Image 1 (cartoon, rainbow, N blue to C red):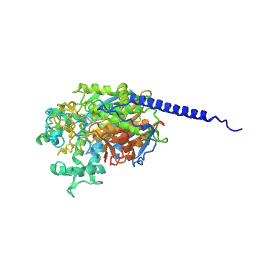
Image 2 (cartoon, rainbow, N blue to C red; image 1 turned 90 degrees about the horizontal axis):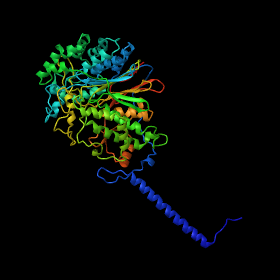
Image 3 (tube, rainbow, N blue to C red; image 1 turned 135 degrees about the vertical axis):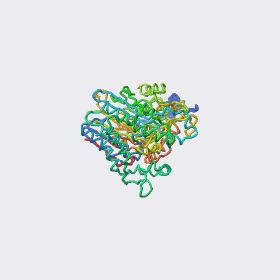
Image 4 (cartoon, one colour; image 1 turned 30 degrees about the horizontal axis):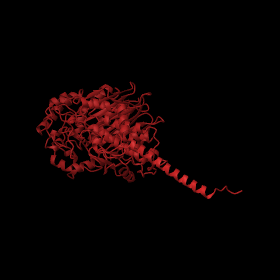
Length: 626
């Protein structure tokens, strides 16, 4: 039996009906598409419509990511320490083995960093610390940041920007030692003496420590300055070559060793340093050289304790972040993390099937946008004791409602700066720093970031005591002095006597609100890039399920709102850069030698403790623990 046939006239009629039906369906589909697109079509800030990029169907390829770096991933059973130098990790670990806790360990490591990493930290500077007490299930924060001297005035560096960077007027009242002693007296284990915390660093300073690749690089860059200030900076000059010390040379700091020994043996080191003979020596040297810091400034200095620091509760399942209020930038950092982890919670991604969100171009676009929104608010912050609005803003930024709002308004295309914030002030660049993260055998966590600000601080040190002085006055903003991109300075960060300048330091502890156990202790050094550097590994550990080493190794994007450009590391996949430019309108520039150096500890799902020190810090570093 053959197929049934129709008369020719009927066949023509069927063809005509079929053609009309196809045309009708095409018109309906086109109308529906236009309605849906126009209903949600965003606009540029000038009002013109954005051409929506169909990224969800276009990101099915894999990007070529760099191979793992040569840093170590430590795996421990009970405790871990990671900071910017391996010697200091060993010292911190030994304190824990003696029965000390995370406070004891972090202080010992910080003393050490002042010897091994003098370009970044020391007792001539200050620090900010986040403490998690496992027994109480409670976070605390300690601000031992430097303060403006009583004679400091708002416009003292107007027309003289170098005056805040170099020399004796750039020095703010140091808080480092006062903060160490306060933390040890109030939260130390009581099983390790004050002298035991300092003695290993005395030995390093007196016997000598190898110059790291990083310190050698800094000394070479600063040699011109040392030649102007010798013999004040003669510790950094090799007497045989008359040049700065090189990588691998053994450098001894006998004057600093004597000072540390005096502090270690003192019955009241705070009185000696801030009111006694040491104070007289320091002030005499500074004032004879033209500086303004006085004995009253030292005597009146106090670290600030925050018994109720900033808390971002349950930002990811039961996990909670805690950290200090401004002048710390914890509020900014947690905002980026909260936005990304909420926006991409249980998100499978639109990347290559084997990669999921890992190769999803939109994920990285959203990360850059979240940074813009967060950094725009940093320009409105300052010391909360002087700027009430800063306190309210920081508290608001840690709410679930605020973070959800930012996640919802992230645009599908990059906008100009006015879209992310209505202010036209600039973020003041900060610099330098060292960081230590500790998780002890008792479940306590400490995250502490220390600084003398720029490399080698003010470029001057105490001739008698060997202390490298900070140039923290440069972290303040100056009226009438824009940032080089046409943006005005931030009034919230103007100089006032006793005020502490705004900082990017973001020491953070993440813990489980149900079990009260620490999940992560993390922080970074590296000036304004600290914020993006800390946010990246937290996001990647949670969203990508990466190890802490993988997350720290990964190349980084950094956008700080002004200037309107995203910096990226030179090992970032170029295809990803091109996709972000072409599909999302992002603007980029490469940056070599990225400054955001992370020290992170994560408790894995297997209960083991994993620690990693950032490979970008060219020091002899390796995490330690047991």
